[in-house]
Image (cartoon, rainbow, N blue to C red; front, side):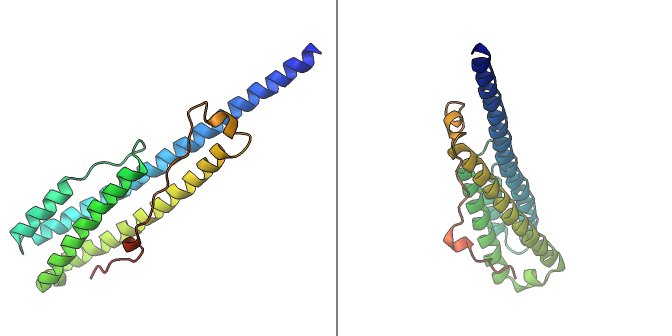
Length: 180
């Protein structure tokens, strides 16, 4: 009889250890996916900085305004929240809007070959960020499913694991902005 109890306890301990390792692995994947968004956003910020520098010759005031917006960015990493990532996206959108307004006001700028190449780079970074956001949300889905489903839900809470927030897409961001 004692052997049966010991065997049951051993199986239970083994299950807890395996479940905890799976939850940690999924949690780390979520953090990594969020960090990848930050990497893509930094690349996009660099491209926007290059565009802002191109506008310098056209309008000193707009250049200063853009550099102020760009300077207010913060790094997104594995410890960031979905809300912080969304705030960063809003800042990028604001900077892009200002750049588009400047380009419309100065047709010579839009004709500049360097401007065109940099805008192509921004388009690629936009796509990379979109893809990274999808990967993050997919990873969060897997994590949240593990945290909420029986039997892991019984140990997830006591071990400090809870649902993660998804990145949300604002309605105005569902359409790709015109970059020309």
